[in-house]
Image 1: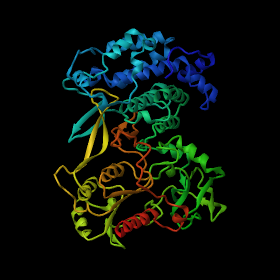
Image 2 (image 1 turned 60 degrees about the vertical axis):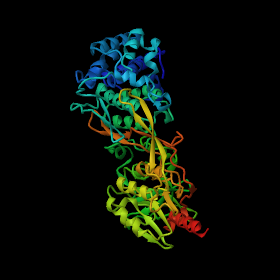
Image 3 (image 1 turned 45 degrees about the vertical axis):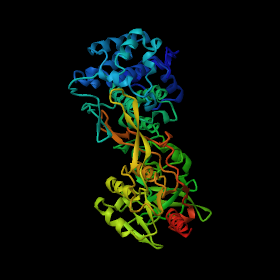
Length: 582
């Protein structure tokens, strides 16, 4: 984070004031001026306001008792802070505001004792609050005041806490208590900043994966304050927030209303489904008889633009775990072949020849979007070779017992976790394949309710605590298929299933996006989703962004996609047959 007074060019200062109060600057601002604005006194002031307001919002008793409205307080502070001519003046404004909130020092409460008694090896602090102790940055009075509320004191009958962190049945639940600004104005600098500050601070204090971002979250703040000040309409507001959210690299992170993507890249889409094969986007399915593209086509260009450039432009606004995990169903592939004009030219590699086709884009499609191999239409079946197959997305909770009985004489079982399962059905399967005892499947990062930004690390054990217990299907080989579309709950159950020695994970690394997904409201009414509870490997190793590594790695090939083959399923069947032949 950049702190202390920076040298400011006169032009940058005048530009910011003009933007805020007279709206006299064109929508497009050069990169040089944009960089200057980042270092201006106004942006420094706003950066400090964002930090102090967010920290106080999530910790001060006045907000938990409902005595103060955190949004109203912010909107009141923004013009005062903008007018400040120095860091010292900003510090005084913020200190006086903090004091006006009322009592903050409640002495030693139970929460303070709880924090002192925490095992430091079982605590993971994600939020960086070191700046609260920086007297040079905040001044002695403001720094001391903020340190009084580092730990939220015990409060009787909280009426309106910003966040509710509760524990039920050994699981953690996080609920955000945000509201809509009914008079939100996209051309108003204060309203735009309130959206940015809400998003930045929510992620700062309630993302368990903040340390895994490619760019330091604090260093991003002045850059995005500058971006927000340069825009004056809904589209620029939406794109700025989407760009910031994408830096989280959390595939759970997105906005409910993503119409800004259509406005930016076009509302017409080529009627195809894309998958990654051999490092390239490949047509895996085609919708509509009038589309000249074919399954197996490798996408090279869109309207003359290299597809790599089109991917890079869209990744700016879509949160992807890594550069090569483009994902369908909410990832970059959903927006890739889009255009403002329904007539688009798409260049592909087909049979080793580069060809360009005219494709008519559509706004809507009928029918499901599916992978290149046939979509499952039954919850389970016995494949040739006497191997049972479970399709979790179609399996109902009360079907599990019957399925296991039906599979009683089979030689092995495949569980296809490229599909999204029912939680209860997937959990019941776990009991049937357990070989013995209980084992740690993963470590869970749960937010600490009285210390925003901190997470307690807890073992999650799967299996059975009953002595000598073995599931009905614990004596035969079980293969779990995963790929990069295996995300969230399927990853959760992959980690549980793989604790058993008879289970083999096959496919390619999963998406790397596990944990509890929650939502919160933005001031303009849009909804944001992201991960609030984290998951680690049993040894504490990273799973987010990396994904789960299969025991046997198998990737689809371009030729296999072209032929409509499910190469991962073929490999799973072959593996079970090999095991039984030994």
